[in-house]
Image 1 (cartoon, rainbow, N blue to C red):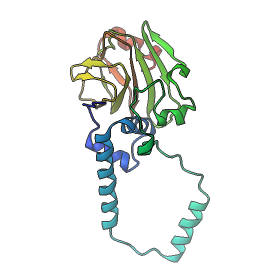
Image 2 (cartoon, one colour; image 1 turned 90 degrees about the horizontal axis):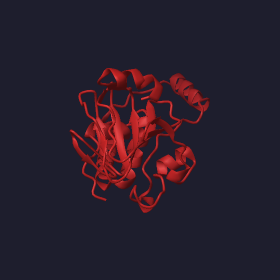
Image 3 (cartoon, rainbow, N blue to C red; image 1 turned 45 degrees about the vertical axis):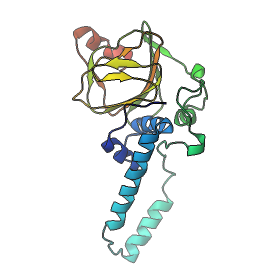
Image 4 (cartoon, one colour; image 1 turned 120 degrees about the horizontal axis):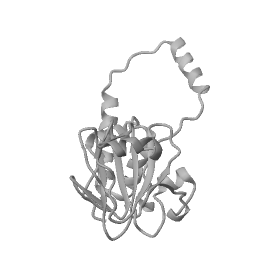
Length: 223
């Protein structure tokens, strides 16, 4: 797989630190299953984070504070873990066969694209909302040759191409490519003419549409 569009260094650093919302961490996990470049960059980010922790000054903790901390930890429920990349031996191209990426399989407890329950948003455009509470995450299926409305973003958005592809003002995005965008980018994804585009999106804010009709439709289509 020839991936041309990669994650920003800041996004990888936030993922390595565990500070990305779960919706965006899911997209990073799916992308790094198939992108060797971003896996390597992620390892560097994790190593850098470890080095920074090692350099922090050690402050003595009183016995009473230590006991209170241990007691608090003992009473905490098990934390939810962010999706992580599959081990190297289990990594496979995202478009190989019809299997979903490992992180999505674990989240949805299904194996194949044909098990997804799509909801129609507009003619030729369908969505699957994903069950994550930190941020918003969903999959879109855009019919061949169809265009999304022109829009920008209220905050940050990650979009991973899983099947097919699209083009916009930023270039062409094929399987495995990821769009790492913020509110400064306005674009209009248009699916390639030869097949539908399936993408996975995660964001920590909504979309802002240009034009009256798309804006009025926004509450009904849930984007």
